[in-house]
Amino acid sequence: MASLLAAVISLVEKFGKNLSFKVGTKGIIIFSFLLKLKLKCFIKKKNLLHSDVLFNTEEKICCYFCLRGLLSNHLILPFSNVSLQCFMNSILQCLSNTHDLRDYCLRNTHHTDLNNNCRAKAVLMEEFAKLTQSLWTSASSEAISPSDFKMQIQKYAPRFVGYNQQDAQEFLRFLLDGLHNEVNRVTVKPRSPMEDFDHVSDDEKGKRMWNKYLESENSKVVDLFVGQLKSSLTCNECGFCSTVFDPFWDLSLPIAKTSGEVSLMDCLRLFTREDVLDGNERPTCHRCKTRRKCTKKFTIQKFPKILVLHLKRFSECRVRTSKLSTFVNFPLKELDLREFASDNSVNAVYNLYAVSNHTGSSLGGHYTAYCRNPCIGEWYTYNDSRVSPMSSSQVRSSDAYVLFYESAASSRM
Image 1 (tube, helix red, strand yellow):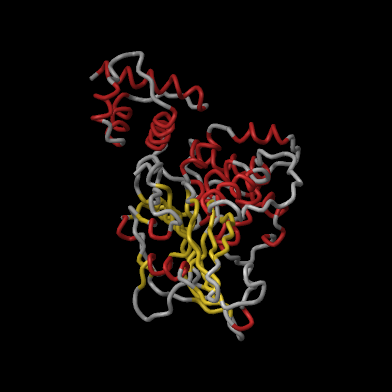
Image 2 (cartoon, helix red, strand yellow):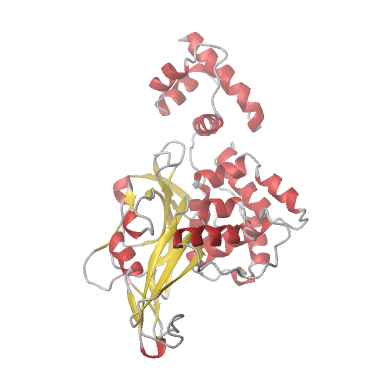
């Protein structure tokens, strides 16, 4: 037992220096942290009794986080709600629990992209990274103050100045766009004319359009969050089918109006169903050279690593905005989206890791977040400056507004 604890302490001290963390604790706490991580089989696999054992980077961060939490008597940190509105709090906690984005900040990899862009004013990404690092490496149990980050997001998007309630999904879009712009690997965007790809197959056209997009927009944020939609337009007169490929950062899914429960798959089928364009909506057929009645359909050409699904609960009416409180039943594991893929052979299975919730009505409400910790796999609820553990059975609710899924191929579940 003593040799095992000594090996673990030595190991933690070795990588603790790289994380600006000094280890000074009793062996019993170290052993408790091992039990917390449920590493009995892991110990046998890695043979911790040997002094030359090394953890990979992911294991180091995981161990460090759990050890830090045990030593500080806490595991999860909230944001202070003194300067941060709840819609920001909810989205930031969801992004903080986005595994690859978190590691991008913890390892300071973003510095390379910032330096390559030579942008002296690229401060939004820097403040976001500092905020993420504070959440994951702070030795204090106090709530984190996000005032510097808020100042920068308000400079980038002045619509978020003040303390008015805003839409969480809109904030997410502005934030990801701002982060992307500051770490875009493309410093000089090309001014090449649009090319005609109609002479190639749809699959090849999609690949060329995606590569064309990356010539201007290429960042870690794009690597994680951006996918590609295929829009097919079929002329009902001559049968000619034209296709367009567009990048997407999230999918806004309609909710069927019903008094009962609907499933997430129902929402996705409603989003991708065929729509008939007729009357004033008739487009011009490229073959007929005149406006024709056409059928339009969406499929997903390229699936992102992180799939953000926005449930369209709010709708504009003539008098005021209304909210749908329909319960949408969504899976926590193995969301299989192959039926919505342009190519059914692709791997399109996802696991849920975060939810941004909205309680209340269109006239006023409150945002919270449910997040699955990427290190220990447990779910937590974030409500302003309060954080508490929760059961996975509580994640589904009629308040779910923005769902964060990660590809099962890279999932840590």
